Image (tube, rainbow, N blue to C red; front, top):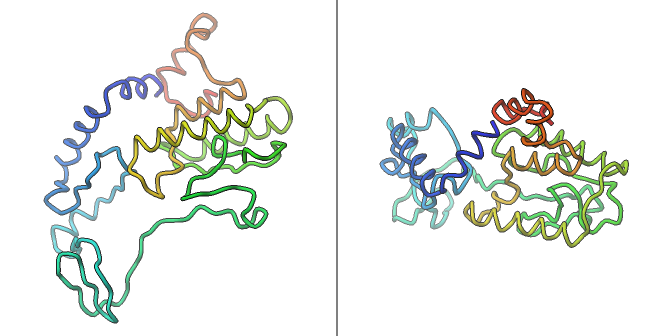
Length: 238
């Protein structure tokens, strides 16, 4: 809900993080089980698993520190402990963003998993807006409504119904998003395409002129204004 989102995010981050940290640890004490991160609760995307606390409490999963080295069958950890006769090692290192099928990866510039795409869609150095990437986002919310809105923006730009800004303005938008992400999340290959559902949907909707605005709507259609502001922020409000 738009009203709820902007009301919550008007509260200073430190207060929101403190409250969330307290609420989460009331359910499961992360420090007691060796899972307390150095960043605050909003510094990374959360991973929820109802089975993990039970596994940790029963000892079927053991938390270990960083790996120091491998031998043929053993793993040594930085605290001096060792795991012997290991059968498998699963490296949960995430993904590298690449586009090898698009001009052998030369069209879309990627540096440390950061993409040179306006609204995570348009390559900024292309003379025409005839190519876009859809769905290359990791939202706080659902991907599919955003992907649908990106598709609407693409076809509006392709047909000439919408005009994209200049290259310099696109670059500025990209840099602003990177700086905001740097302040919100820990520096990681994982945190390069993060968006918040409502603000990003509003950004895309503004390009094609379908963003609901409360004050004009309250004069023209009061029930609609109330629904788009206080009701669920579903795709159909755009």
